[in-house]
Length: 420
Image (cartoon, rainbow, N blue to C red; front, side, top):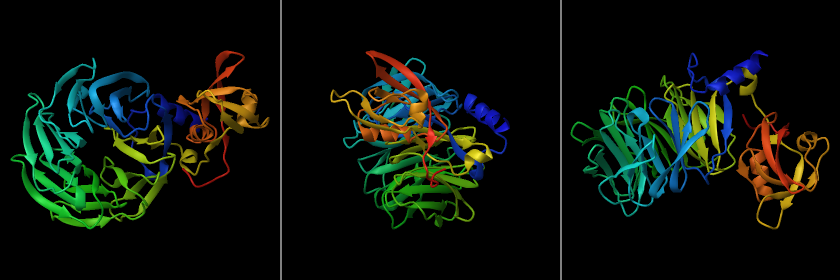
């Protein structure tokens, strides 16, 4: 009963502070959300922690309540966007991407406030607001990073020093420093008082994909396309440590609130937690079924979110000990085939002793969606089911006898022990 109560409290209010913050040994999956979008690229939290914004590749960003994980509203943009960032207070969302334009949206109404000055023909990459909300920094495909005045929308600086597209951009917690990173593993550290380059950092790995400052602002973590994850000492201007283990590009990175651990997300389908002092991997979380594309730590420091090319949003945080141990993926005990009309899959076989059979699903039923995710092929069906754990309750929307109904299935456990 105690474990069930803990899980209920965590899911009922994911934003509630948890004493001690993230404990890597007790970090596990809290929730899976299936947004009504395609492959997801990025997630970010508002500074007050009340909202989350998701973006894929299209003209819409989705605004979510970060406590209930219910969609609040879609935010329509004039052009396709793939990158988002909240301004202080969470009242403004910056959205940019391949279109080469950045727009500022009012989150309460969805209204476009302004389009920022300047077009980047090769698009925008990571974006970050200064902590005071007065300036916005973004990497561009034009081998530069741009800085805007948020109030007027005027471009203030085009930062030099890069010879390839700039994919990483970040501000330090106090805003006195900023960092940009791009092709060839080059990172520029800027003094934001005059926007002068303070340090240039280089390594022999791939192109920089993401940057994150430590809570104290004296360290910088970088991820790159060559599976590299590195920690830089900014006071000394040198590489302090590399973290070995990822087998594909690192596409998300964040320090825990106490600065003792680093969280990384990779195209190798894993999310990992690392001990900053020793460089040791202390937890490996694998529950996405495609590249993990984005990572954001909640301002409370008690949980974080990841997005994936599998179209899933995952919420991770402190869970009871039993849930933090190895847990098997879900299984329903069904075989399916396309309907032939491009909508749903037909159940060709249902195990009477399996989870679906026990819930009342029958051969001949047509499954339209699983856990909010539409399915039209066998592979999509398997991915949707196995994006959940054994024991999870998942809603199957089916057609039977000309009508639609929802059947809640308590998934069985797939016989494997390689996932948390």
